[in-house]
Picture (tube, rainbow, N blue to C red):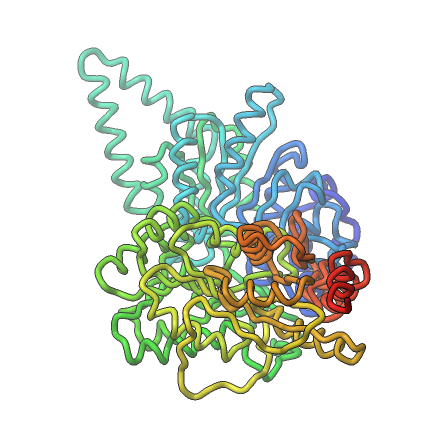
Amino acid sequence: MANILDKINTPADIRKLSAKELNQLADEIREFIIDVISQRGGHLASSLGAVELTIALHTVFNTPSDKIIWDVGHQTYPHKILTGRKEKFKTIRTYGGLSGFPHPEESEYDPYIAGHASTAISIALGIHQAIEKKGTGQKVVAVVGDGSLTGGLSFEALNHAGQLKKNFTVILNDNKMSISPNVGALSAYLSKITTGTKYMKFRKEVELFLKAIPRIGSQVAKKVKQIEEALKSLIVPGILFEELGFKYVGPIDGHNIQHLIETLKNVKDIPAPVLVHVITQKGKGYPHAEDDPSTFHGASPFDIESGIFNGKKPRKSYTQIFADTLLKIAEKDKKVVAITAAMAEGTGLCRFREKFPDRFYDVGIAEQHAVTFAAGLASQGMKPVVAIYSTFLQRAYDQIIHDVCILKMPVIFAIDRAGIVGADGATHQGSFDLSYLRIIPNMTIMAPKDENELQHMLYSAFTINGPVAIRYPRGMCEGVEMDEEFKHIPYGKAEILTQGRNALIIACGNMVHRALCASEALKKEGIKTTVLNARFVKPIDKDTILSLAEKMHNIVIVEENVKSAGLGSAVEELLFEAGIEKVNLKLIGIEDEFVEHGSQKELRERYGLTEEGIRKAVKELLSHNTFYHKFVKRKKA
């Protein structure tokens, strides 16, 4: 049998295929995705579940003129393959290759970027209104996952769309909710009938006829409508969307291409907001992903036949160390509670959930609520820990300020994936947390140099009467020996790791070990450096830094964060306020730009966040530093 995927270059090619060929195409797309992701890693399970839906959307809608807005990009690999990026798909999530998410700079078929959940309906509605005002007539479709509906932004947008009462389509790609028994012949038949133009016309004519009856017509029509809604609520779970002003269609089988195509054709011209509820299976077509969709959501390279992941390292990750430490602390303190926003696995809280189910809260994709909920718990004497990715904490910025920091609520933020994350790209890099948290009054910020220091920091955080943020990177730990007992870290105190007179290197977090390696390499070249582990980014250790700056006028500051408003800025501000003028500073950090996708190694090399980058920065500072040479001459004289 000829390979159909080889002949598909644009969605226009799909629209020429027969029903049998479309089904074959779906199988080939799945095989292609599994083959590539088994080698590269990526978001496998969600994309496998959205294959037929993607084919149907591009068959019915005239893309790229019509706009498909995806909520998060986890489900968009089939979309990329069918929209001219098939040949480059093997470069997915690699440096210089395809993004793992939709990106308008990559393709005209991607109207908007999609890295964070719950944004699609708002974006799509804005595009829809702009198109309406321009009078160009394109259709707009938002595709959201069931998890995205736990985010308040989705409901704000649904409410607005319902008010506008315009032709606007939302596809709910549901691969988790427990309504799948409704999928079947009866549901398919009902959906087919209720979306057909004849039915819609008949319904409207009956309504007009009843209302025309003198005196009682409107009352009868209202009663008929109530009966219709009551019956509908018994067989379909769409009454909520109907109340928001949407015509609800479904649930329908998201793996039946012909049914999807027929339904989408029927709803695309309805002059009202429509929500089509599609049931799909995460990991569809790959048994290992079907059995364990959570593990295969964001998969590292794996063996296709066995489903076993490659390259497992013996060292623990920072996430695991956080999880182990929190469990130990919670065993001794019943006031400790853990909160996550739909990321129990990603933040390492699964074992906490199993051991302390009454003290574990997964609030869904609702970061704002997670933070304010934690503040409420803290106000009553509980000890909440909000485990969250750096990039997702950004979504709750007002809540951090208004609900936590103003009243000094003792909420601990365990900030995972801080700094350079890697292949997920610009929407997921944790580049900003030191900056956006440091400017908030009452906030304490810590960054551990290794796993041992992480456990001590988390332990120490519970002794601080106020908000605390501990940020740590994605990936494996340094492999240092772990202390058996927790130790208290003195508040706001840095740690001098090496002593040297030529230059001062101030580092925090995972940059500390790189600074130590650079210091050792420089020592072999006759350059002796002092390495200071900042530990606290707020408050910084003013006394120690000023004391060292008086002795060494050449300072390199390294942080895996944007240069603006982070550790480097804090040191600059301190020196300026202290009136220390003859100091030469070199900041190593992320430039004023969004970090695109690539491996962590490649991206760190790009920004000089490596042993070699630090070594080079110190040597350049010493060789070209005017103040340094003046300082040496004065000492000799």
